[in-house]
Image (cartoon, rainbow, N blue to C red; front, side, top):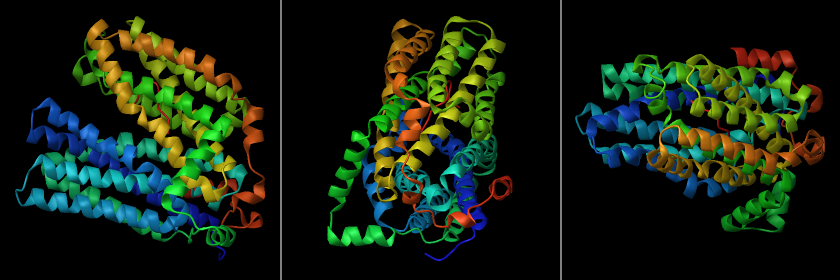
Length: 442
């Protein structure tokens, strides 16, 4: 593989992710607004969530297998351009007066399928570009950018564009996806290494066999499986309470709807702070302590929300819960990248995300059932108890030593650049500088 400037390679990845996150943020506001104008049927509106998450249940594992077989640069490029084409066609239909919820469902489903390809591939790229000691910093910058754009930039812009014209929001989102694909095209080739290709040629496998081997590796990796379970617990309780937060805040807390934005902005700010502090905090307190905090701090936040009445205390608790969740996301991503061989990383990442993201609709359903049966505060109290139990059952064996022992030897990570040409902290910093209740994780 020819030598590539690490600064340019990382900047290309960062730019691609930033642009696709901008598109995600735009559409996060525009898609619900559009479906609400097309139908007031709650089942039709709820169908958006089903269509959005269905690809993660049916396409994640094949997407991971493809990430280990194909050039990951091409996956990012093609996946983003596919999303651009889908939303451009939707925008064109809206501009010509062809409005039907089926068109929106189709575009969202297509984008979701492409997203499984893009996201799985993107999460496997940093260890191909950077040495192990730079991964926390790189992941922190990527996740901080994602938090800022997805929360503070994209949704307000998407809502404003939709107010001008529904098609304008989707045209802009399509353009952002197209730019993301163009930025990904600047990355170096990220094909399987020659050694991996030789092994594949000597023992050919099918996609199904690849999926099975990735799932088996994930399931037999005791530490990674344990981390996945506790991350799934965090996501389960986050989704169980996230959709009900507006009812709690505007009901028992008596907050006017005009101030509800605080309960979205404050946790988002905490997630950004956590992403930026990860490179300094995680090495000092250790990944094991971080995992405990990722469960116990949100548990405290849920208890404050479910039992208290102070808006200020609730916002402070949510802020620190988001910080803890963001720190844990860096630990989890770095563990996968440092502990899994590159030839398996796409498939193992897909298996991990199937477990972690597959619980989201289940959590939302459980929260709704508990809230309707026992009152709006009950899901928050149940989430607090549930996360404490999850920490006691799962986090005790996730220690800093266990995380270090799980890492592969440095040479097996196959970076695209030599160790002598690895980027300095300044290089990464320069490249990167150019709303859940408890803070979820992926």
